[in-house]
Every structure is written in C-alpha cells, then in structure tokens.
Length: 396
Image: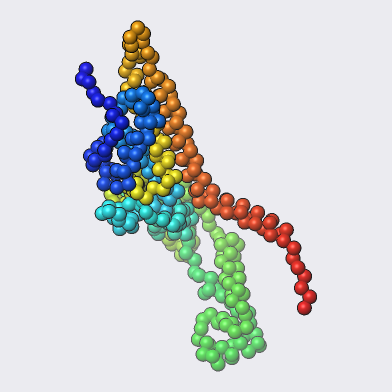
C-alpha cells in the first residue's frame, strides 16, 4: 500500500479542490474553507494525534454542509409557497439570477390562483362555471314512446361513445315568466296607465309599474310564476339511469304540441380529463422543478455559518471513522492499540441527525402560521398589559 500523506497541519484552498465546485468562486467560501480545515482538524485532536484526512476531505465536507444547509432552507420555502408557485412559467414568471431562473432571492406573496383552480371542479359539477363546458342538446319526443337512449344520441349526433356522455340536467324550455306578468295596479283606477303614457311607456308589453312599486315586488312575482309553473302546473317528470331517459307520463300526440322536444345539458368525460391536465415543460409541475439554485455563501449569516461548521465537522468525523475502521487494531512495540472508529461514526450520526432536526425546528418556528400565531399572542398580551394602565378622568 502506498504511503499516502495525511493532513500536515495547514492548507491552501484553490479553485477545483471541491468535488462539485459550487462555491469555488465565492471569496468568503474560499477563505472559510481553510479556516474550517484548521478548526475541524483541531477538534479531531490535531496536533496531539494524527488526523488521517487530507485538506481535500475537509473541503468536500465543507461544500456538502453548505449544500445541505441550502437544501433544507429551500425545501422549507417550497413547502411554504408551492400552492402559489404551481403552474408558473419558469422562463417568464421567475426572476433571473446570474443568468438562470431562481427564487433564491424572491419574496413569494401567497395567492389564490391554485386554490381557485382546485375549486373549479366544484363549479363544473354545479353548473356555475369551472373548467369544463356544459353543452346543450335536444331530442325529439315521439308519441307513445317513453324511453330514449341518450347514449345512442351521442353516437349519432356527436360521433362519440355513449359512455363519454354525462347528463347534468334535463329541462323543458317553457316561456319566460315575464310574458305572463300581470300588474294588478294597471287599469284599476290608480291612474297608472295614464301616467305611463305620459312618460312614453304605454307601448311596453306587458305593462309594468315602473314608478310606485319597488323592484323586489317584480322579482317576487316572477319567482311566484316560475314556481307555480314548475310545481303546481308541472305535468311530467323523468328519470335518467346510465344515460337512459324515461318520461312520465308517456308522451301523447296532444302533449307533443306543447312540448315536441326535450332539452338537456351534458358534458363529455373526455373533456373533463383533458382540461384537468395542463402545463408544459417550462412550467412548475412538482417540487423537483421549482427553480432554487445553490445558496450564495457570502450572504449566509453567522447563524447559518455556525450550523454549517458543525455539520461539516460531523461529516469529517464520519469520514475519519470509516478510515480508521479499515483496521480494528494497530500494532505498536509490545502491544496493539484499538482505534475509535465506532465512537466517531456513532457521534457523527447522532450529531448530524440533531443538527438537521434543530434546523427544521427553527424553520418551522419561522413559518407563516407560527409567526401569525406569535403575533396574535403578542397582541393579546399587549392588550392585557394595557388594561393595567389607569385611565384618568378628565373633567372639562
């Protein structure tokens, strides 16, 4: 085995010494890389004992720690803002940093875009909007025929499979209620007809009192007419099962003079599926393509850098433990010495887990939800404190 040199006690970082080179051009990173090497080697026992690492190992751990720190920060930001980001066009909607789209320096204001998009499905089912069109069709009724196959109608009229048809509403278009409107004040001696003529409204049909009665009166009358036609005067009903329409009672030649066609509204299931899948290769479609670049080390504050130093030290312990684990014991004159690889790996594992948990807990405490809760508590406590202030009575 070749005699591989170990850490000599000093280092000099140059670009290209890290595995990925993410931060090699950052002046603060290059300065702290050598400082961290000195810090970590001394924490591992140098110069009392040899540290079986090279400066490249320290640099690799330092780069990984910065990257892990950035990943945790940005993963938290993605969780916070994903509902506001989904569907955004990366090229057009995301700011550009150093020639590429990145949200690293952006403040994302929550918006209702995706929430409204999610609620469109309910509008579709209720017939009040949504992202799927309701179409209108009609079928000619035949005397003495009670059952009608709307699935076959879809094949004949639309050229689509009957299973693609979903009936949403069946109705008969009766004359609108306004044509049946009757104003009891017209022609009853109240002088309304003459008044309407004087304003040039005498040609309106039907005659409506525009002057004395409030608008809610007209609305109530129209609603009364519609409910009367729908409930008290309705002479047919229907049921739809698997796009099979059955009418009650069976249409007759006499009834067809008033209702020759039956209208219905429907949607196509294929359109519902097609409209539910949108986007393109340039849009944010999942958490993996939310554009966050690696952090800028220069802009990481002292709190973040302290965490990075500790995490990188844990990585160095882990590497040193694996290296020393190559040999269980080392022979010395007259005896053997057991190495502490187990202690190093155990300590490194627990320290890394504790640091990750601490960072995630800190991020959770600074979430919008937690900050709003804290502000609400502060407001409550402030009110309680102000209640203790005496209120002087002024006599003027």
